[in-house]
Image (tube, rainbow, N blue to C red; front, top):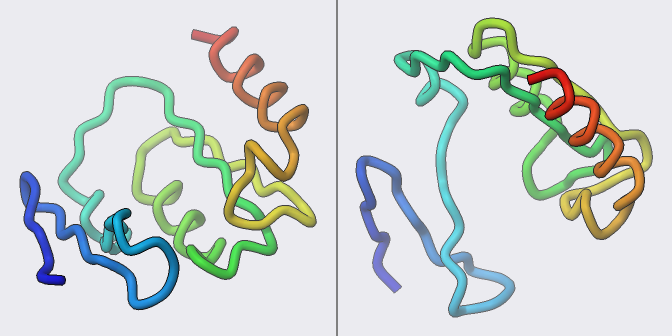
Length: 97
């Protein structure tokens, strides 16, 4: 399937996995020009083999004031693998707004 461009973001159908779900293909550098005025929480799993944790670190570093939380022994599907911890992080983050 061909790539799809949506507002400057490339959606690419994966060679593996569900054929009807495009994946967002991006690099952390796309965040250089963002001006975000809202507190940002970046959450990543240390065992994520789909989107490496190092990319989440880069994203958090590029967004001024962003908070980074790395979830140990968690992969790509954080909310399913560790829903209690994800909910606690979200409640804490949103409670501070």
